[in-house]
Length: 592
Image (cartoon, rainbow, N blue to C red; front, side):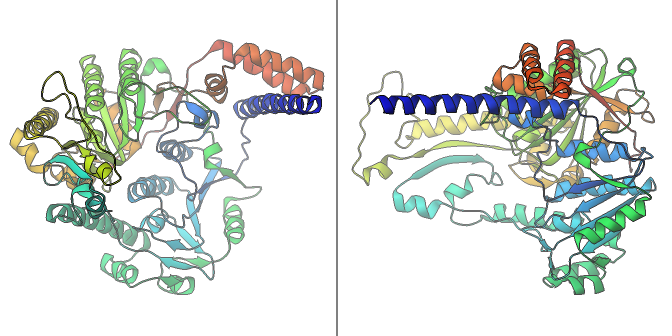
């Protein structure tokens, strides 16, 4: 028994030591990332691997913020800043095998074309493409002035595919009754529960959307490759192409291995050129000052939910589109006298109407304080994602952004018959009116269903009213393009739901314009909520403080690590200052 307890005590001590070492290891990693100065060679080629998975916006909290994960929008700003950095000679892309999405490809393509127009080069290398559901693997690199492809691989670029699962057949077998009602016929999310295949309206909407996205990609890629759209479409729709055929058909320029392409771009960049990861690239400091005006950047990504961000923990990420957090960010930005306008980046399939309403009202309050709000739509800004955008001064979307879905649905799954099949029965005692047990396991009765439908109609009418108010349209005009239907950004602009086609940087320029700022000068950006440094994120995760940093410095002294001690002391001092964060981006000329 004594041996057992000694073994247990030893295991416990070992576990504690492991946690302590892991904890301080995280501190040292964060410190190194925060304090290291990027090397700035005289000749730089920025590298970007499109196989890496990135969020649309950099996380503001949680473990991802500690690890310094950049957002896709950050990379766009870095590419724009690099246009004016004389040390940067070009960009080297590693093509994605499966694609990055049509909207991201479109936005990246615009950034790369602007970069090339500044007199710099873009070279891409692909190890083959398997276009799963769309052309974005090719679309994302088509703007390169030189495309390499690895020998022995295949280029398979298909059209746009939407595939939907339908569960009604399963539900019929298990006795589950979906009582989910949609307003109106194009609000297709409940179809997965209520149908066994596409309804005519559902199919019509998706076919029209897919055709718009496919034609947009074909037109852009054809322009980049110096081909006619019809010729390119015929080639791509005829099936996979081996690398050798892809070169003959002018889909790629050279065959070679990744190291061959790297050597080529470094030679092209000049003597002693080096590859620098775009995510780690830092542009030369800007001379722009906060007192001259700033553009606030607020972001929302994912499902729109009510409440706050939740607790920061090591193993779970807080929601990125929590209404309390996003609304507060907008209000705080509006309260900053140096902020002249707000760019609200929206990348969301929708979510809670209540949460969307709260964020909509925050946008309205910002406008009441004289701050124009410009929406930058990412890959998806539909349903609640459009709701939060409807009242903005301007809405900017990519042509292939999926937006609209102005509609509402709700209800429940009646599970009583499902449980009955396995011998489980229910009985109910209800006090407080007929609607009290509406959300029990059984079906809605006639009166309850009528109340649910009436509640959904009120929500739909409010949604339509807010869109009409924001877009200067009547109820009937909005209803005609709403009814739950999704549109591409290009289609949405034709129907008055979007003001301008463009990406994130176009939205920033639009915000400057609406604020009366000089669009020929760099825009100083500030983020709300303020992005945490790696150390601050670690503090929120583990309760680390500046005092902890000083304690770690003492430990490193005992270890004889003078460099680590100096870094820790410097970081502790910087932490005490608690300075804000801002960055500048260069102006761009917008296409009209």
